[in-house]
Image 1 (cartoon, rainbow, N blue to C red):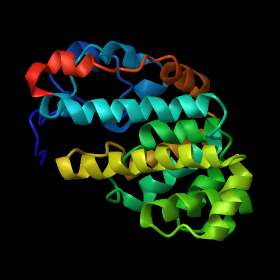
Image 2: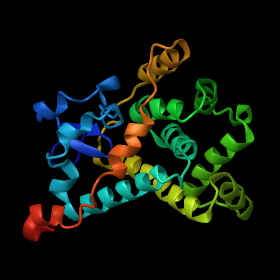
Image 3: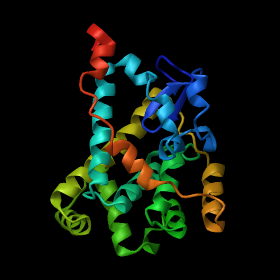
Length: 244
């Protein structure tokens, strides 16, 4: 059961909103009930003036999360972090750290992974734990994301990732994305929030991408949405007053 105020929550991007915010929730793409796909398709604009669950409980944590989310996607939009590396990280962490059958991140990031050029077969291989079926570069991105979260990055893995990403700065900014995704999953689990995508939802997406009935995410719109966002310095403190 959810453990924080606003127990009936709906997920949009990295943010949690109350289910009773009907006007905002009507904008969400409810694949699997999670609504994560809303941010990908631009519908999250309807949510921007609503306070999130985390914001009401801890405005300073909300401010930190928002800064980090904007910073990491701005890095991706500038081309410093390859889309494919970021999306491999998202689906990898979901399959590794979500509770089976209650998958975090996948509602938004499976469509984005397809748009970034990751094949349906490779996603299925990752889901089945068959990393030997992946190409060398894809396997490196998967293993690097897991190493970042486990504390197991080696010199060799670091050097390979720098070569793939193109710069040390890009790898540092990729790591920030990886750890933001990891924190998102773990915070949601600690709060008791569901991931929102079931096994049936994931199966349906995979089948849909195979037969063309599912639409890949609009990764360009996703990047533009975050890259154009202003830094929210002072915004949440002003709303929270002395509670910040």
